[in-house]
Image (cartoon, rainbow, N blue to C red; front, top):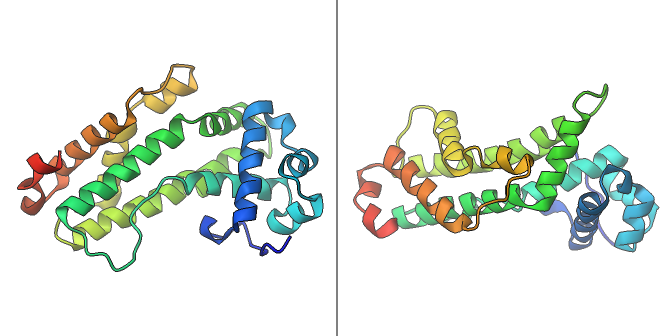
Length: 221
């Protein structure tokens, strides 16, 4: 197939090739449409038009495939990229809003809801790894990248906090609240994720923004 071999235990999702990403999309769609029973190597190979040998080469066993699927899904939540950009009050606001909107849209999507419901259903089983994979390859991946963003905001003199973990979890709580739990229980998601994201970020910046940020709040929010 010409795609590279990656170690799914340590690889960043950006290391997956476009072909591998397309396979992961098909695998996620199979999971949503057919549940756990549909997620077989034969089914994924058939849906993605590739060989089972390629799946094993790229992702390893079924747990490796699940790990890659979760990491790929988590990578859809964008955060600040270290590309030499100097953060300003406006760009910090914009980056955090992008993170908040992506987070809401990913959590509210059929894929994330299906993965979480499947993990909850398996939680009583001995040897079930899905919940652990969701934490390690999903939530914690998102957490690390988002905390890098707020750390960059502090270094730029735009945010002030003594505990980065506390500041980040305040942001997460403002963005998500109890929405994800309600959706897992069958309640419909938000109609306007952009408005929720903007409100959450405005509240976060009022709590943790320096004078430099607060002075620009009317223009930002």
